[in-house]
Length: 200
Image 1 (tube, rainbow, N blue to C red):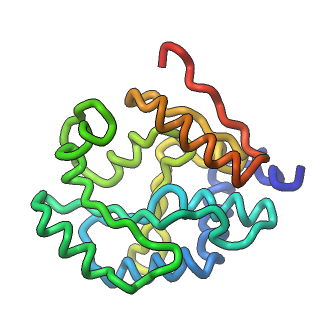
Image 2: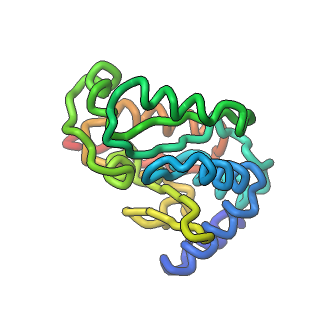
């Protein structure tokens, strides 16, 4: 199973390989460089565009195969809709394929209950938001900082290189975990989706 060829390596080696793979992706590299020009506070490109790029590279699929959009998160204490809308409009046209979704993580608690069915406290950073994604596998974020790639991966990268989607029990997000796992399997049947435990 050649797609698992790096799964046995230690975390420092996986970090180097991960960053090399995503930088080789023309779409991700362009998104990172473009995002940097927006000067959004505490920004990171997160989740799917990153781990999907690794899976595509390791399984011989095309760049951006299965990627619906590129998630660009930032953190601005100004929680007004107008400020977020201005940030979104500032990026119009900078990357069209796949589309970019920009969200101010300081505003998430204002709409989270309506979208997911339970309240959360206000987040304090993009990194805290990443910590709470429904699947630990998805908890990755990258930005360009001082000319180098800065990676945030609170649960490590082994799940990504093992083609394994692991639940994150920090929030009651079983439905999201299962939905994302089912969709991912349609694109990457090599994946192992770990079931949400009943007491999760």
